[in-house]
Image (cartoon, rainbow, N blue to C red; front, top):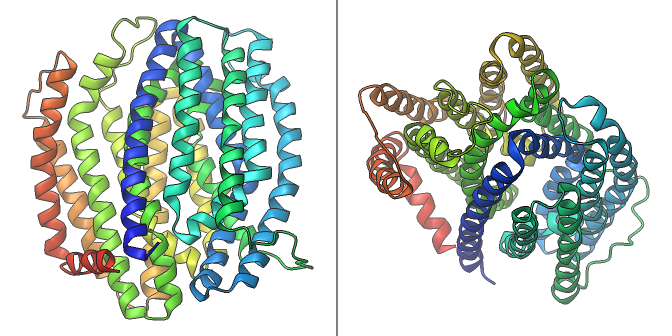
Length: 497
């Protein structure tokens, strides 16, 4: 498959897959919320966040291996590809055993830690099978996924993920509607998720059967693995602390409130991330081609497209999130779900996070992750300490405020390293792209105060959403083209490639 067709396929499959996942991801939590209540819903989401932390055991491997794959893939060197694949698999196998032992330990300890009324053995069994799903992925699948991402074959990953998720969500929906114990629901989810293993095995054997996973790697290590691991640990501590802090120091019901808002923002982030992950391999390949001038134009275009896109999504979401939560939680009266200040905080978290995606990616593909470790740790510690302090006084709004306060540190650092240290230029282009999007977002925040949006059903919600998206989208696109006119040229060039 040529690059043009591959890019278009990645984009199409990625967006369609994410739209289906979003739809299913909205339906299933609603069923859980109605049939099991806020306490159980908060528990499920908190355990999910804990296993996000657990995934850190392999985080440094994935990023380092993907970056190491770019050069041999660009040069079509099969021997080096096999070497990197063997090295990655060796690391993944080691971490799988550690992960398994940790899963078993967590299964018995979590019921004592979390503030919930769900029975001990239900939490224990649910946690065990939630973790076993990831154990299988680590041991068997992750090497294949990392290679396919570097190769630019994200569409394969998305297709297999979609098949698995549809089946898994189907099991969850069927059992939840019958109010089956959540431990049995998670067991069913685990069994169905094994289908992914079969799909990946057959595909890789057929398409890339020449890869040798048993090359003697000696004492070789993945470049920047430890630095990437620390950075990923810091990021997950930074981004996934909130629900766990709420569940320990407030209640799983408070965590449920957080999860409903977060579900919307994660869905939108996932939609944009499906596009980004489908084409960001161009950045890695272009940087390794040695044409730095062309890379700079591509880099700036990615900044405009993705910072602009998240700003559009967040501006629209700011107008519509409260009406959506009202509709989504109708009939659920065991806790209050309406907090007027939460939309602004959630929106700022997403916009600031995406402000360093492209610059952070450049730090990774240029193998300059080690100097960033201290900043990553500082960001995570600031967020964690502020969350622990503010949660006592402000609850949900406190943990989110801590995240917003900590985020600008990494945005500034990534901009400095990528522009001044790596690209050897003044950061004015990056600052102008970020600045125009921040400015427009706050214009719409202020405008919201003068607009009274009345939405009483989902039809009104979708109609309002279409008009708001159209108006907001046009203004952001024009503004981004004003500060970065190279974006259109580079988008066209990717299409032609």
